[in-house]
Length: 283
Image (cartoon, rainbow, N blue to C red; front, top):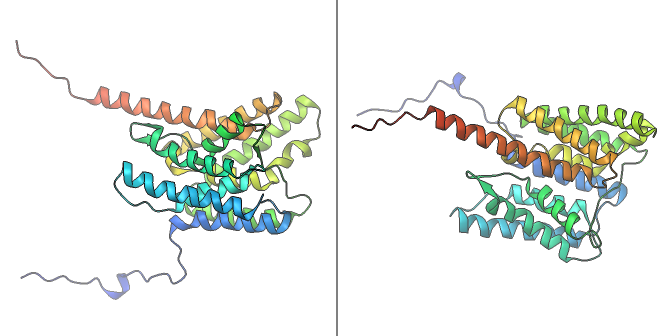
């Protein structure tokens, strides 16, 4: 009869009393952005519309995961998508919030290549609504104004969260790229550099930097690839801005993110084909 021997006490890791599961770090951060942004500048269209987007996202996630995968999902991702839609969307009607949330979650299950969904859900849903219903839907465009404290609080906590999730290099690369391209845009257009940099201080960009471009399910696997991808996102965003495209960051990620994913999927498939052993047919 064998007995299980417990490891010595000094080798056992003590449980962290105040630890937080990494799955809930992002929802906690996005809730902080919501609270800070709304209490400081009233960024929400309404609590009811945001709640509608969250509920539709969660319900859709539960139903679709059960239908397509046969499992009950962790709803943290759906919560992030719903609250992102509630914060970023602007419309006098209720239906865009429900439709955008539903389209966002559906994209995870319908638009898949080799078992991977290739668009960030909320980026996909918001981009589709902005493009197809511009007369009814707009996006959040409020900046933090001259109040630096809200931005500093969000950036400190956001940076700690993203660092813990090992995605800080993505956000950092995007921010540096945005700043460099902002100086370039200022030089090309003659506008003050402060005006070109200002958008990144708003709540919209906090969501974009901390959640959309870092989404683990819709970013390429390699660290170098992730950094190159967000650099190209910032480059395409600059091109769109120079052509007066209002929602440049959303459209840039909508174009570049899936392209990078498809290239990686194609390369993986090609490697597997080359590595497959040749089959010899006897005469």
